[in-house]
Length: 421
Image 1 (cartoon, rainbow, N blue to C red):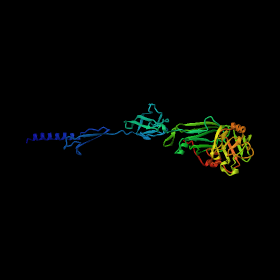
Image 2 (cartoon, rainbow, N blue to C red):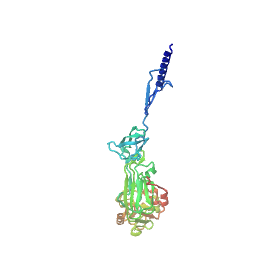
Image 3 (cartoon, rainbow, N blue to C red):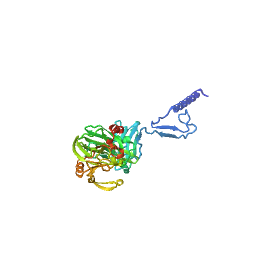
Image 4 (cartoon, rainbow, N blue to C red):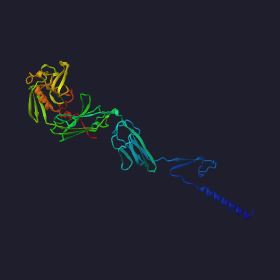
């Protein structure tokens, strides 16, 4: 072959090899949001397959990094109206969010300073579903929805609770405070945290759980000693939405503000056959009386109990019943109840001949009509009645208000902490 022709052919071959090398080194770039792969490719070929010219590319989208975590979880039902509701955003911040009730009213809430948390800010209603809507943006710049619901317990779970003494009452110096519940609390410690008492001046006292004669459980408070006259008492029971049991939740927050009145104490020695009334330690009245005759005939049910009773109720006319001792619907006047075992201070003309000299009653303190009316008009609910001289003492077997039948140490041993919520 002509040498010059050979040189031209060699140059042409070298040029073709160069073009092939340049083509083999060229390539593209992938977006950060996607991952691309090719089907049928062979390693080292730059993604091209000499065996399969029809390779198919697939793309996977990377999900947003932000997430929402609600406590309790969205969709939870049967929640207390005061349940703490919250959610947090991981790897992102809240853009906007609101919770609405079924009528579209926006519920108050707080968003954390760092925009990563949300907390409900007001009590909710009974039997309602609340809807949360909003958005958050993640650290990757992608936006996510915030959406879910919470549902509270039904209206039929509302349970009434009460406080005694009631608002604006003026009461005696031995009055106990009682917060009574419409259902027996399952978690007593949690319920007790919702109760508090404030007194002016400050008074030492303690709370204890007591089951009362009506079957209701209550937290009862008594001071160490009789209340000082003029004490202002404020009781606060934050019970709205508080769970008592699985089907009972507090219907409302309740309070009571009342005043301790004058210091009046009845002092009654059954063997003296008199009943003394003291004001601020001074005798202001002495009434001839007749007490229970049980000590003479051996029937303990007819013995007037010794111990500190408390005036519980007053009725100008009252029908008394005790079939065991032969009377039903016996009308008695000026009846002041001092225990739930049937003990009263009341008028009894039938025992007038014994008043001042002998004990002939069924356990009550009998006075003349005039004396019983005078005492009735002077008595306050919560006045102490200190009875002595018998060998049977007032106890829990005698009904509701036996608070002062216990010594302070015994009462304090039953005490529970309150008001720490």
